[in-house]
Length: 261
Image 1 (cartoon, one colour):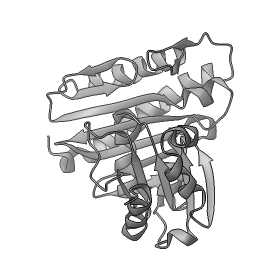
Image 2 (spheres, rainbow, N blue to C red; image 1 turned 120 degrees about the vertical axis):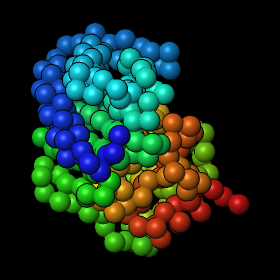
Image 3 (tube, rainbow, N blue to C red; image 1 turned 180 degrees about the vertical axis):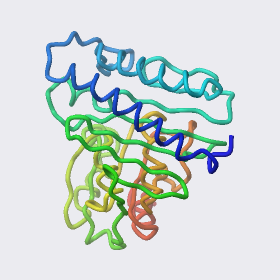
Image 4 (tube, rainbow, N blue to C red; image 1 turned 90 degrees about the horizontal axis):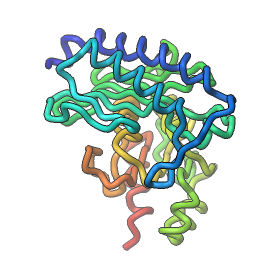
């Protein structure tokens, strides 16, 4: 597939798919749902499963030769050079507790590189999209990452703080003393806010490919960077420790901070 030749077609279909799936997600939001627990102790509901099934059906009917990787139903045709990545409800704990900061992630990876990423926030009526070589926008309005280069002056969000505190207490303590403004947070929304220029850096932990691959294309299209903790490009094989930064200078400082000598 030549992504450059059909990128607008793919982007339009991704947005149409997410818009329809967001309606389904919202039909379950703040309703009484039965909650199951998966093997990794994370929660899942009928909303997660039905939304992903809807997204997968829309994607595979339009692009049957593409592979697909989703949180709830696994992978298909992953030997294809182009595959979709789906997280139907990113932040199920937020979703089931009535918090409107859950997201919906849809990405496209071509020849190993994330080239299209959608981060939808159904309860906020916000849809972020980034395309390699095209740019990023929020609800059709162009967005760009900030130009902040100094971590001491940056707004820093720390995702999965309790996990970091339990497994890397020294790094967590350093993070809590870094930046001009810092917030403890979860899930995809901080990364989307970075793409839109509202915050400057995000440190994340214990993610899966469906959590980060759709977001990479958005942040890069907005002019930012998203890597693992060593500064390497993110892939299916990444270990789930993720950094997002508005500028290369910020990324370098984050890498130094989370990799103590």
